[in-house]
Amino acid sequence: MVGRPPKYKTVEELQTKIDEYFNEGVKVRKILVGKPPSQETIELPVPTITGLAIYLGFESRQSFYDYQEKEQFTYTIKRARLFIENDYEEQLQYGTVTGAIFALKNMGWIDKQEIDNTHKGDLNIISLGQGKDPNETNK
Image 1: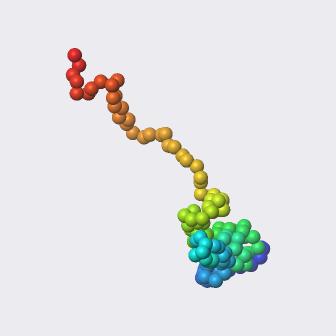
Image 2: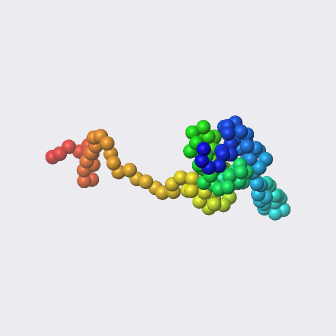
Image 3: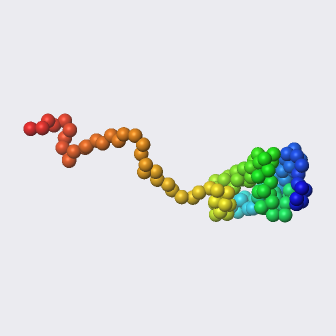
């Protein structure tokens, strides 16, 4: 065997550590909500790919992504990434969205409008005439 031994030997071991991250390892950000005088501070969890990679003991995001290429860990890593992607998507519903948009674009989301002008099948062309009353008969 070449290289370093695998960090996680079983899917269960990796999943336990991922669950631990989402339950107790995610950093929390304090934000102010509301207007004075009823303004209050709330805490929001901020899960990130790098935060998860660090918590799992990887030395880089790439090492974390490489684990996804190992067949037995593919589903587990993809699902963990999906939880983080979901958090960014939820951020689009409130507050400042610029960071969430940037993160989602890096996760493969596309921010562009596409128009499909290819049409398969027959076209029905209806001539509406030139302002003539369709009920009027030709004279």
